[in-house]
Length: 107
Image (cartoon, rainbow, N blue to C red; front, side):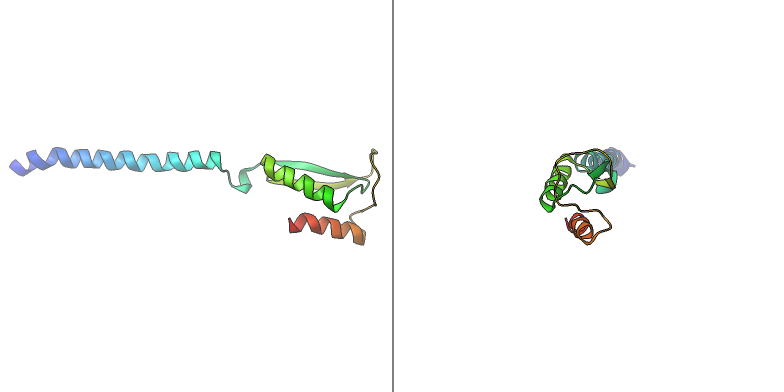
């Protein structure tokens, strides 16, 4: 009985301490998940190539910007409306277009 009076409070305190330490782990993981979210949790965006007006350098700059901005992916479409600066055409179905879209895959 004397042992229970001496070690009982210490056992309760140790159990409480372990519970407190264990409770912090999920919170820390949750906090880390917010600070460094996995790619599956990052936002995605639409990425339009207008009439094939694209270059390898432009693709690289766009992808680098998306990564810096925390964008996790994109829906790519080569749209045939609008206008802008004209560069070598790169329709996705052409050999040049496949080379350029391969650049997206490689980065």
